[in-house]
Amino acid sequence: MKALVYYGDHNIALEERPKPTIIKPTDVIIKVLKTTICGTDLGIYKGKNPEIESGRILGHEGVGIIEEIGGGVSQFKKGDKVLISCITSCGSCEYCKKQMYAHCKDGGWILGYMIDGVQAEYVRIPHADNSLHSIPENIDDEIAVLLSDILPTGHEIGVQYGNVKPGDEIAIVGAGPVGMSALLTAQFYSPSKIIMIDLDDNRLQLAKELGATHTINSGTTNVAKATTEIVGTEGVDAAIEAVGLPATWNICQKIVKPGAHIANIGVHGKKVDFNIEKLWIKNLTITTGLVNTNTTPMLLKAAATNHLDLKKMITHHFPLSELEHAYQVFLNGAKEKAMKIIIDTE
Image (tube, one colour):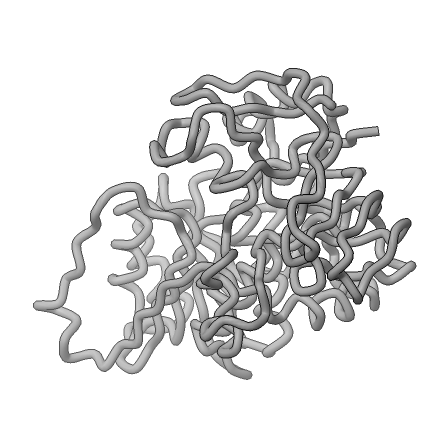
């Protein structure tokens, strides 16, 4: 089969690899129909995760058809079309019993990281009963791919951890795919104002189309001053960090009111400063996390209503044969106006 293989910092190759086989009774083998590239994959490509073994097949998001099934799988059958969750969960360890699937002792984020992933024609999925989801017939395959990772990540780690409530005034720092997912799912909770902050005017325009009430270009505007002009001098009720850089973290620290939440989604590759000398008095709640995907079933139902304008987030399509080029397009997202790229493996 064809697969995208990682060999180290800035070294990937699309090549022929053996088709995966069943290893444990709880496994299935899936013929991948569609996959995508995540910002986390770009981090791996840039050498951000040196612990990943050379020769690893990348990718953790996708939709496919079950082709082979282990004897211990009871919830799915051969021929089922399924959503592949970015998080693998055994369903029985102490963390899974708390719905903290990200920390599953025999799973978590392992696809395209600790085991071979989905940027390939076929993939082995461990703990299939707890790591796959049936796709409602009225959800398009491309939309379903967005529910593998970015939509539950934005919802759980951004919106839910940010404790967004009706009437809140919130800010989302970073208008990439996860930030846009936070924007869409924040609207479930009826905040009165949603400020999207980014450097890219094209992304900010899309944010307006997806429901942002205000936008701020942090490259040309004093964000703290602009925020006070929108919500007043106290600041926002919740700031959602969706980039993973010191500069975006600092914005969040500057714009929150007393009693606010800072919800960090971004994957940080270097340390940041926490200005506790200024913030200790503010009664803030600061959260971090890796998505658990416990809200994926609910999000699938929400997507099936067709009230989430997810299609606008998909900007590019490539066949699997052009996956290396797709990485370059996504890497230069601002120039290429790329948001979410769909890879068709057929």
